[in-house]
Length: 494
Image 1: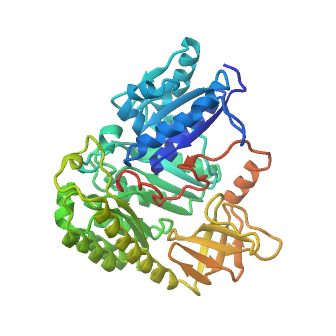
Image 2: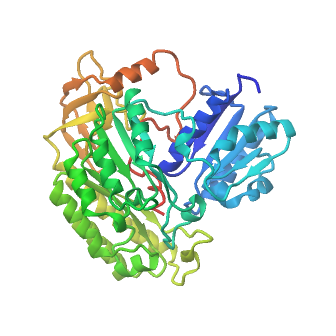
Image 3: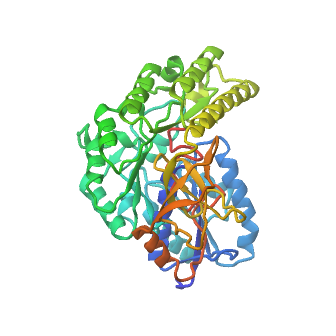
């Protein structure tokens, strides 16, 4: 293979997929590929797919169709399809899009370079889907999208059987990494300049179930607190079933664990939760929220909610609104129920008309936006410390605004005055002057700038021109990892 062959990775779906794409990029670069420059046609295009939403199939095949004439006009170009949709559809992808060269699944992403080479030599499509995990992804080469904030996978797979979710059948049973391996990876990242990590798992707080330690996750959080130079620790997404008091204590007592919790509700109706096989009820969920608030009064709690699950009545929906009012989420990622073939919910009686689901969805969004706005307005006049981000949020040239995340993960757009502009990875203290439902604005100027090792690392990486674009989450570019599930919330928001 020529050393000059270029690649592009297009990623759809959850944080797990975004992190997997960092591995795919690392594998390709380790095999001699180079990232394609912007506005150039890559030699290899890799789709890392999601199977969660109802239109995932149409989206993939539509994109493959748009790419066909590009491939026809560029001899030697290859197209690979991986991820959850590839695991589900397997040979169907090549049947519907015979111009695809490689199909690989969620369990064998490490095979991608070999499959591309085999397809190139044999001049025929290669389809390889493994039924169980071949190699834990964290042992593979990685091209990290950010030098100052990083994903760290602590487990893969899921042992739950939610009736709406197709992911356990595509990601497999939960497999946990050993704590020593996780901490070694975090220390290596910190040595390279990272000051923030987000611990990832399909049900991140079920960590330890494979080796029989029910307190393994809280112990891991406390161990992260002992890593010198690690300033911010986040995790996503926990399951209410596995949320224990020792985890709340570890969050409250470990200074670098951020006062932020994303915990999927899905429905406020205990009857619907039972039909979803969610293994907790309304009272249990609100009890966790109460304990978290008692231990961390300023914690920002966010959630995922599904509207229109089969059989949901108006009374059930009112129970969801009740929980939203009581929990006062900082933000909620709301979804209209999406029927997925192969899940028990797809064949349940009581599938709701689209117009009913839409009307309930709009009421929920209106309520949550009002609460988010009220909660954000409480922060006007306060100082917050912001980790300056790259490629996140809005930039405003007229006001010289940059963007970043507060400790509670709220997005902050802040004005920069003077000549010294903080770098991505630096920490700035700003005063909040305005609140919107989904972000804060700080236009009173930067109170203080703390230049960090992370900012130094960003500056060093960007000293030479960098080719290529960031990993894509749908269409927008992704710079710093965003621990909030912007599209699907991992598997928990399905």
